[in-house]
Length: 177
Image (cartoon, rainbow, N blue to C red; front, side):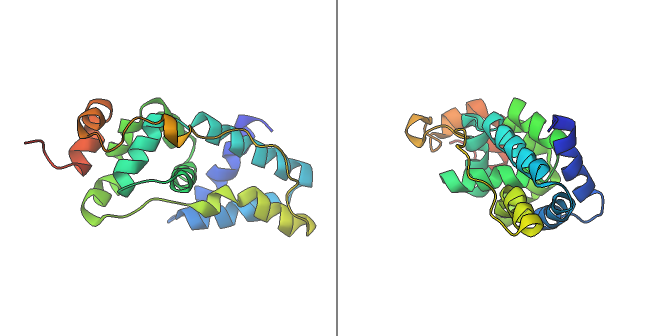
């Protein structure tokens, strides 16, 4: 599956507003379930590629700041939320996670404490395959989609957080003394 075809599924799922990540997932499942099983599998593989490309330390740090902490599963689910916002949002935040500070929902979360996770986006291919064939998505060896926790820099180091993610730090950290 080509990159454009992968993102076209998400684009179609976000055309109707409002489009919460759960709604995006439901619409994408319906879209994919009408396709050949091979296409569904290929879409799932491409999602794995997106997760590999977005599995950066600084994006994880951004999720940590925004969500008030972030486990391995939480980071995966944060990226599911990000995928539901489309190709441009993913590309921009992978390139420079601090751009997330410009998203209205993220800015509002600094006051509301909202947490951004969308596990349902990560299961689109599995659900579509089950719906289309009555069978689980074929198990495949999956690529490593995130750094090892032991290799991460200390996300509780506020000086480092401010250096790497100044805009997000301004929103989510207390001003330094």
